[in-house]
Image (cartoon, rainbow, N blue to C red):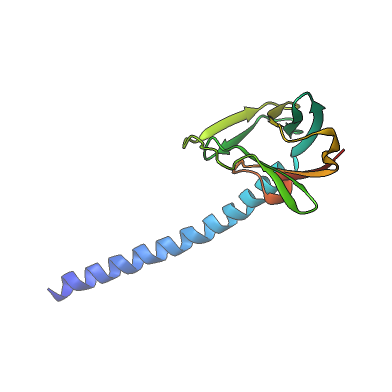
Length: 155
């Protein structure tokens, strides 16, 4: 009975030691993965443009792949971007307000030099609306905050 207990104890110690060494290896792999992810971030760019059209303001959001490799971005739902329009701090339009989105994981591949384009039209814009601030954020899991957001003052 005592020998059986000792064998179990030795086995647990060996398993614990093996797990500890594996974590050190994973940590260094995670660091190199973080560096690669950061480099990928710099190769993706969000841009926003607005154009007055009959009936409102059309907003175009582009996610450009500036790298020489295909990039895949993942969205955790059909809510792929946020778009908010304000004037002097007052919210005039929120794209996602009162919307329902599919609950599905969506992956999009963007080829080198190409872009993923989103658009929306805000019907509340008129000539006398004045200067507005348009804030957008692409909600791809792979993008960090700094690379996912963009602002534009219109006109």
